[in-house]
Image (cartoon, rainbow, N blue to C red; front, top):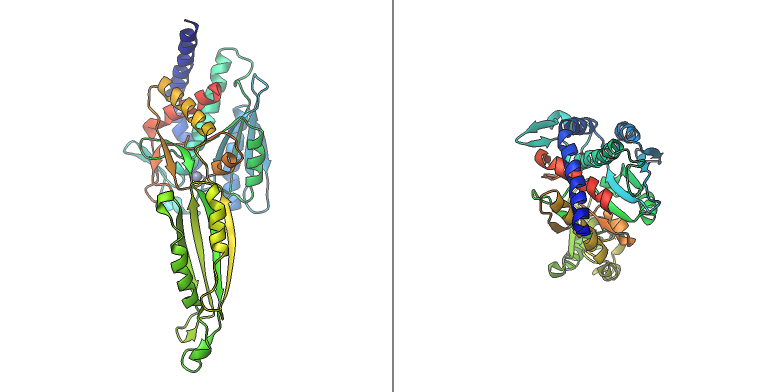
Amino acid sequence: MERRIIANRQSASARALLRWSKSHLKEQMAFIRTLVGHESPSFDRSAANALGEVLADVLAQAGGRVRRHRNAKFAAHIQADFRGARGAAPILLLGHFDTVWELGTLRAMPFRESQGRLWGPGVLDMKTGIAQAVFALRALGELAEAEGARESFPRPVTILLVADEEVGSESSRALTERLAKQSAAVLVCEPSFGLDGRLKTARKGVMDYTVRVTGRAAHSGLDFEKGQSAVLELARQLLVIEKFTDLKRGVTVCPGVVRGGGESPNVVPAEAMMLVDVRIPRLAQAARMERKFRSLRPFNRACRLEVSGGMNRPPLERTASVVRLFRAAQGVARELGFELGEAAVGGGSDGNFTAALGVPTLDGLGAVGEGAHSTHESVLISEIPRRTALLARLLESL
Ligand SMILES: [Zn+2]
């Protein structure tokens, strides 16, 4: 009996959050338009800072205590802390406001609404996700105020929006990890997976390697025998490295960039290099991959081989604590009247860092859409209210 009363009260809150989100959809779409209208390439600090200020304002208006984390290379990362009624560990909402799109993209790819979608650079990855997080915080705040509650949230909530995720998070990683360690759980507002909006309960880890070969240059006509071709050596290494791929175990090795030689084919090339992207589903696979790269030896002893690199983002593994969070999200989705699926994906996010620390992490809580990093980048408008309510209800119930 008592359980049913609690369940009813829970769904009443879920319904109220969904109603609030639906009635604020127009306002939320206008906010998304503002976010997309502020182009924010990772390497354009002043443009990205302008967007950071928009976010700082909105989070302060929602009742957050805002901090700007300035750094040497990128726009300031924006943090906002919200108090909770219980003195428990906070929930960390994680996102990034930089995009892969350079300044001026909006001219060719303007923000628009058509076919039930919003379109534009960064709209999926991840400006709509940011808007959903901001409106989830507002929904909880306004509903609590209407009920006369002293605090908006049961637990404290910290939101961190970084400015360098698309280029590896070098300046924000330590901050993300520090906040995650203090938190009970991390909810990542990156896009969901597929048009059915599955959450991401596993992400592969990313390793980067640079393989550099130095040979000896010589005139191809006059001194051919004196030359030691770095390109030939690199080509042979390429065939070795390519075999490191193990699709059965989900390990992929992609030598995506290869460079060698100079301007002219009449010189035996002395320099060659490649950049290799490696994806691994499990952290335990990293040491093995590292050994394989470190044990590469030149076929041609007259060439020098240098290998550098290693782990960039550790994998987000589908651990018991990830599954527990996902089940909680599924329960909330059912309260809101829909089924939530899960997916394992190859791409990394800042959630990889927090999960590797053992902090329960759930990713893909952002927008539903398709075409991240491509010209048909878009989000489904119809999904925005319930995804906003899902996030709000999760903040309330964890
Ligand atoms: Zn992203």
